[in-house]
Image (cartoon, rainbow, N blue to C red; front, side, top):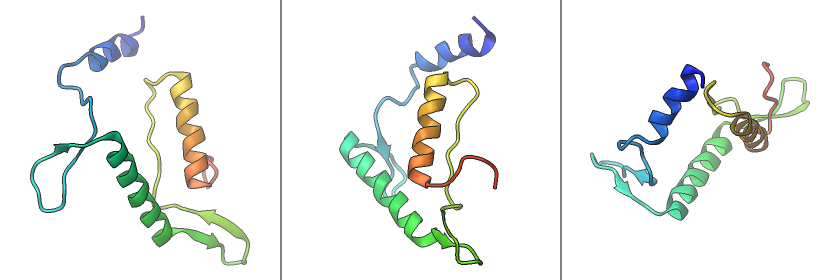
Length: 102
């Protein structure tokens, strides 16, 4: 196994690894465990609000572009091909922009 792959085993099995969704409410200094439904609903709401505030629907020429350039996705080289494919597919679906450089 390559060094990246062998290091990943330590990460996946680490005792300190986060195993449940947690949120920190505004004004609090502590994280609290929440259900996956609450966590995913919160992520969806925050992403929708961000998109609504920053979506560029048309460029200066009036062409529809639907660019959401204030948000992006981050992936790592240590991921599997399958994980990279899922990240790329979800990013394209959610952001509705090309994953190619602009």
